[in-house]
Length: 290
Ligand SMILES: NC(=O)c1ccc[n+]([C@@H]2O[C@H](COP(=O)([O-])OP(=O)(O)OC[C@H]3O[C@@H](n4cnc5c(N)ncnc54)[C@H](OP(=O)(O)O)[C@@H]3O)[C@@H](O)[C@H]2O)c1
Image 1 (cartoon, helix red, strand yellow):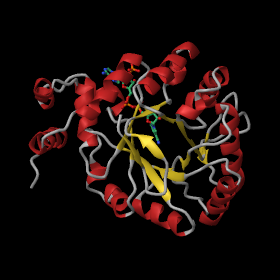
Image 2: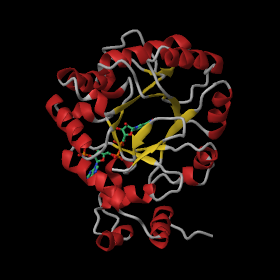
Image 3: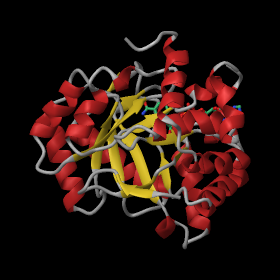
Image 4: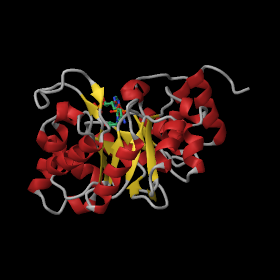
């Protein structure tokens, strides 16, 4: 599995990342199998958020790390903070909202450490742009977490280029990624400046829902006439399409099946021809480029 720094001063990640958003839908034993299968395939980076699984997924993952002390050193852990909603574990919240206050960022990161049974996160992201975001508070929270060794690197998720640029101005270290939705059903970031800004900053995107949550793998035979040419599955072609982009996108795959983890890892072996890439884009947008 190819590995790459997501930013020259950022962490080195596996080019395919495993996302834990859906992992509460399977047993803890299966989560253990998913982790070990991913590591065996060279997928060493795991994407979490405080809220996944109704605020429970980090702890399930942490239980696997608690039961095998050697695992943590073999992986990189990403988590997110800033979204709040009511749940059994968060009874004081009555309305879904964003909270990027210094107090909440620090509390949430420290709670993620406890849940994940680790002493540091490799990367912490602000999950969504918060209209009440005060960049000085975010900068203070990030700096303190960094100084304390609790979080090594920082980034954002679902930010527009102007939101990214604004927050970066207040930090003395780089935002190392913007985790955004990119797939053959969500091609806007290739044209709306999202990826341009990251390339200008020598930074790569993490692509969430790279298979459009599973919708991309059900058919669409016209696009996937390529499957036999590349001896690849639909999901591998969809990932290969993202991997072909020169900004070095890191797809975050969300499967809960070990065989699909193995299948995803092999997408890196597929090098799509330029014309095939454009034909897939044409299918996705239903039109020829101008
Ligand atoms: N930053 C954000 O705002 C944000 C938002 C959403 C997600 N994320 C991150 O992105 C990760 C990935 O998101 P996602 O789960 O939507 O990604 P995805 O990989 O696009 O979709 C995963 C879904 O597709 C299904 N699937 C995968 N391969 C398949 C195949 N060959 N045939 C049929 N179904 C298939 C999976 O089912 P099986 O489990 O049965 O394989 C699963 O339900 C999340 O885990 C999370 O870490 C971030």
